[in-house]
Length: 159
Image (tube, rainbow, N blue to C red; front, side, top):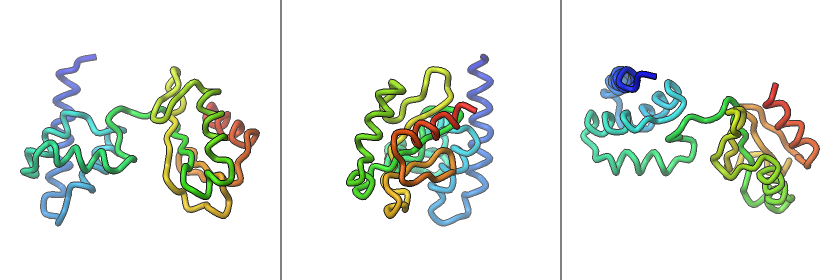
C-alpha cells in the first residue's frame, strides 16, 4: 500500500467535501458525516485539513468528532452491531445479554472481530424501549432479544 498516495487521496477528497459545505452555516457536522461516508471513518489527515479550512483548532474538530459516538477514527467491520445500553434495555436484561455476547465474541465495545466481519458498539437508545432489549445490525432493528435471537442476529452478519 502506498501511504503517500492514500494521504493525497484523503486530502483531495476531504478538500472537495469541505469546499462543498463552506457556504453553509455550521458546516462541521455535515462535513464529518460526508467524510465518514466516503472513507468509513475520519482519517487523522482529514481532521487536520478540516480544522485548517474552517479556521478551527484541531482540538475543536476533535471535540465535536469525539462527542458523537457514530464518528469513527478507525474503519469498522463489514457489519456494525449496536446494542442498546439505555435504561429500558438494561432493566430488561440487556446488560447481561451484551456481556454474554462480548464474552462469546471475545470483543469489547468498539472492537472488531479478527476477520473484520463485525464491529460491536454500544448505543444509548434505539427508540425501541417497549421492545427491550434491542439492537441494530447495520440499519436493521431487532427487539425483544434473548440469547438465541441475538445469536441469530450475529450469525446473519456472517452471511
